[in-house]
Image (cartoon, rainbow, N blue to C red; front, side, top):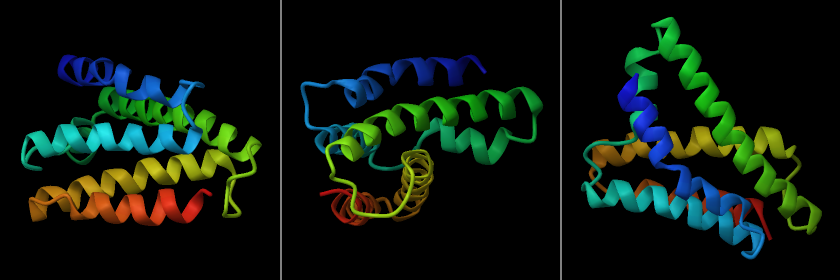
Length: 138
């Protein structure tokens, strides 16, 4: 649990960009996911995301399940707030609420992490960005 807490708190600066109003909101999302991808690329896509790793291995344990659920909620909420800014600017291209879209982005990115680990490649992240950031936002 301590490792999970250190991992989550260590990513605060990568999440902080989501609320930086001096940056275009679509660019904030792109930068957020790019920073996450860069961390994985540094490790040659071998280790994945500790949140996703623990989700697949430890979620049957109630303490981990509860903490992971709160992490996903908090992460999704930070993304949702950024998407609210995108929506307010009239730049949302699809019919989805910011809440649903934020949860989807987290899930899709974590799926890309799993593929990247298997393929030892960043191709899944390129596809993620092409479909989500280019396809969902103007």
